[in-house]
Length: 345
Ligand SMILES: Nc1ncnc2c1ncn2[C@@H]1O[C@H](COP(=O)(O)OP(=O)(O)OP(=O)(O)O)[C@@H](O)[C@H]1O
Ligand SMILES: [Mg+2]
Image (cartoon, rainbow, N blue to C red; front, side):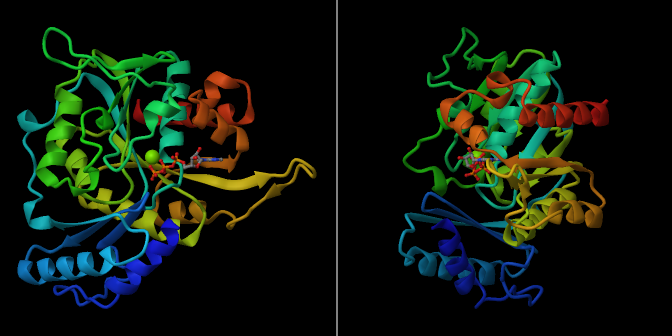
């Protein structure tokens, strides 16, 4: 359903071209990204900062057209102008006592970011590291459920939120503070404020790693985080499908633009091992993400197969590493965690 809506969005957007570059806003254009999550559409246009009126006009027409698509509940079009992208001074940055801050990103939705974030956090924690997990998905947080957490955080005497804890990991979700009725009409300053609260308004204590599960795409939240927190780097998740790879490329380019290191790219849902024949079936394509990594000269961190248990574990709120620490999937996450630790030391 989401993919059908996505292709209709691009059918409309293709009719417009960037007033600055003259490139049409088709799916291959690096300056448009569209995300559909449960009927809520978020389109972001990365623009040059000139000809603002023309961009606003395009945004308005896009919004009007996309709102007519059946199944669409809300449409938010954000214009990100690189004119505003000044360097933020150190004292204005979000503050947190974490040795490393790693953002987990993807261009396309539903590729397994949250699953990866939860299991990477658990794998790092199994290496005796102190880990915090921040769910920054403003379009619909899913990490608390995957972590088996259903309660809400409370404030301490300093008016700071105390992170919830499970499996030795501290968790905060932007979903705890946002109004679930209107998540997609959040504009830049509101996103900024909420993210700031996740850093400065939470009693994280001293941690070795903060893993941030980003919302999909290349919108306001990603740019705000990249510019306002001292990210050690980002990890991009993609499936081997062409559409996901095209969108992953947009994510990579966005991080490059704002000078965030890309620590690596992970291929999720790489293959399926059949119960009967025990063979690997490459359902989408083989080595697509690996080739992408080579082309962009960024580390390839590994591939994670389609695994029914991984989905069930997520649904039940028990990460793979807790449910089956010696399983193949757990070993993959531990190996990725060890490589990450090595690369950040
Ligand atoms: N390797 C895998 N094998 C089987 N199921 C998986 C795998 N990775 C993720 N899933 C399942 O796919 C669904 C989407 O995964 P997840 O929520 O982690 O993606 P996401 O990128 O965070 O999505 P969104 O963009 O909506 O936030 C979930 O039901 C999850 O359990
Ligand atoms: Mg998610």
